[in-house]
Length: 84
Image (tube, rainbow, N blue to C red; front, side, top):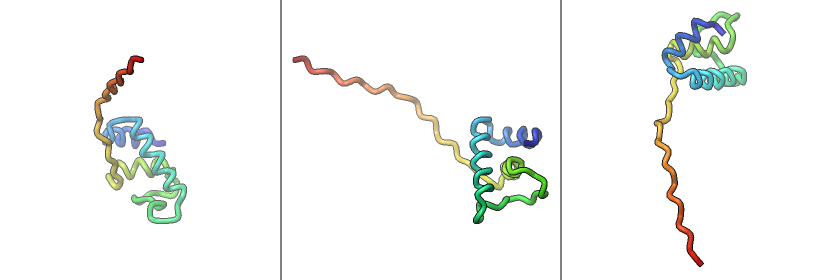
């Protein structure tokens, strides 16, 4: 993977863990082929690797992602036991 592409994509995504998940999912799609999702969304040279293609798609904003809203964890209230 190209370090410059990683830095640029990380600036857009914000979280390295999210970036890894996005790139790995896109690489799987490109490996699978067989349809519209199996083709690169950007013009790339033949020598470029699949991870670099995915990073380039992120940088050129050809691909989007939605982060779920953070929800505060709530501890459940324990049920009272009946005394026998």
